Image (tube, rainbow, N blue to C red):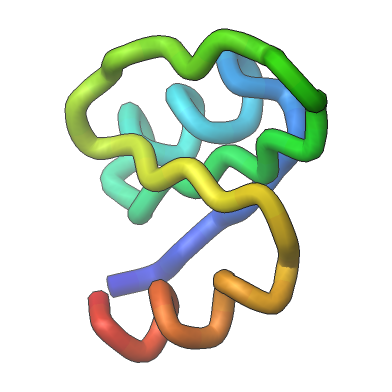
Length: 56
């Protein structure tokens, strides 16, 4: 499945999910709260992305 990653939760991750892609939120913010939304994967480092993309 196509994957889109981004740093803006509402625009990037939710938008990707709503468009039928795998939504990935790159959350680099220390202490930022992670919204509990189905269909959105949260990563803290781009090094996590290849494993996620290969698994989908």
